[in-house]
Image 1: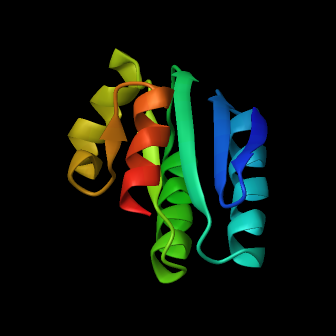
Image 2 (image 1 turned 60 degrees about the horizontal axis):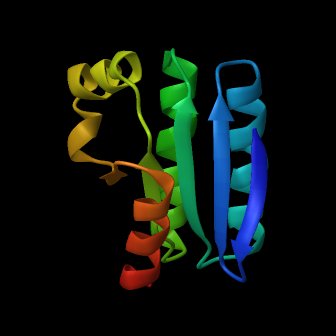
Length: 111
């Protein structure tokens, strides 16, 4: 993944399947811990598979961001990954956007 600082307090993460997925989310978690109030948009267009470890890391990132008043948007989720969100009920917990531009706009509006 590449993590890009899109603005002063918004980061854009372009995720890929494991093992990069875990490494990149760990990096984002460190950034959010250092900079409370950071907003993150995650682009899932390169993710085809989610495992329980990936889900746990996403939940941890969400918790960190909510305590720091940051916003998290998940974008570009393909059918196989979306099925995991539906089956686990996580579609009710996370906020989703169709694509990255929508996610960035949504974060800016809510911030």
